[in-house]
Amino acid sequence: MVEITLIDAIKYYLINQEYAWKSFLAYRAQSLLWLFYSAFTGIFSLITITVIYNVSSGFPGWNYYQMLILSSTVVMVIDAIQYNVNGWDVIRSMRRGMLDMHMVRPYGLATIMISTQSRAKTLISGFATELAIFAYAALMLHLSLAYIITFLGIVAIGTYAFMMFLLMLTVLSYHLFKSGMFMNGLINTLSVVGSYPLSVFGTIIMLLFSILVPIGIAVYYPAELIFGKINLVFSLAIILSSIAVAFVSYKLFYVLMRYYTSGGG
Amino acid sequence: MIAIGIKDELAYKLDYIISLFFRFINVLFMILIWSAVYLGTGVTSIRGLSLPDIDVYFFIIYALRGVANMQLPDVIEEDIQEGSIATAYTRPLRYPLQAYMRGAAGDLMAMLFVTVPFFVIAVLIAHVTLTLGTVLLLLVEILIGYVLVNLIGFLIGMTAVKLISIQGLEAVIWSTLLLLGGGIVPLNMMPLVVQQILYLSPFAIMLYIPATTFLGTVSQSIIVTNILASLAWIALLTVAAFIAWGKVRRQITSAGG
Image 1 (cartoon, each protein chain N blue to C red):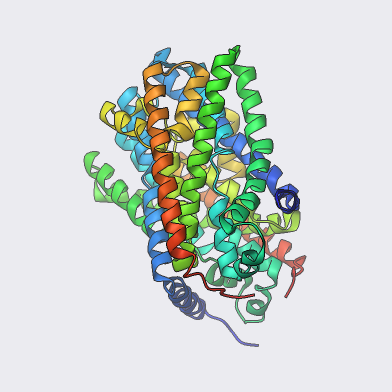
Image 2: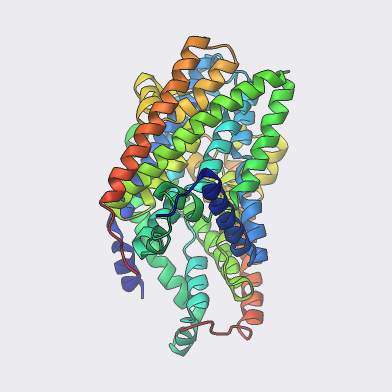
């Protein structure tokens, strides 16, 4: 029995990333277009929010720059997750039996999936665009570095929880639909919903995207904390919720993978 | 050829239903977002559009996205990647027409399962009685938009001869179309200079102009300007398509089989 350490898992992840990047860059014109596309769509929410604040007073309780922080963080979180867990790629791999050869390796299933099953390398340019928008908004809001680090720390914990949740949901989608369409649709919807304060969608949807689909704990509540809309106790509850979501999702992921049957070979 | 294409499309019924479900959900979220803006600002109208207008606008936009979808470049790309363009050449129908026919099957399905339901919802919630003149004008605009989308799609498809994989280019063009066509925000909410430029572009007629014609919120002068500009674009793109096809058809090589 080979004992796998965290260092081994990280090395395995990095080797696979290097391979994925080389594959991606093999078609240079194509990869440049995808990188441009990802950066370009990154400014969509910036344009929408700018237009909204130009023609109206915007969303109650949220100023223009706060909205930019919220929307850019959501896209960064989703891009970072998709970079590692892309539902479409994972399900396609499961359907074609391409995951099977990776499963014989002595790493955890979650590590294998996160390391090998996403081709969405292009999202790095989208992430960079959003980071620039985030930095600009943070500068305009005069946010201190301590505030930003606290915010990003809580977002990082929430992002991990959200990633584990999406990994579990991807396997569930495979069982239910055998297609990546549901995950694609969900990610697109989450990019829209998450870019705006959850409160604008009403209590039921707010609860839905806080508890059932935890994008709220990854971005919205940390943003509310940094802008002083919620207190410290509530923010601790968010961190605990993130840990709980990550734990439950991880366990469920392994339960669902027990029933995995390859779609081909 | 269209019948075969329709059978292919129907093979993925569940995907169609899921896609339709998320489109519907996305319209509802857009409506909720704009509702918050209107209610938060405390106004009944922004740039001539009331909140009910905005609701209808997004339903119409999603209906029109079923018309303005690009199947043609996918067909050409697939033929070039799989080498089936070689067998297509042996058929007694010119390749661009064959490719269009196969893409048209997907277009028909999108119109049937996306455009029609969303348009019906828009009519129901808009409480408008469309005059014959408006319906005809709408049809003309939609037809012009459809022709433009396919001409652009054909030109993108042609690049597959050189690039082989054109999904990235397609995605860039589609996003541009959505943004500049009024699919993200109504064009009349953009700065005036930007609006004037976009009314002369080939994109406004694909989404914004038909949507606002339906609502009756766009002036006749803008409609006329945009239709004339779009016809000029059709002429220009047709010439470009002929030249492009004439140049690349001799360079096509079968990449597989």
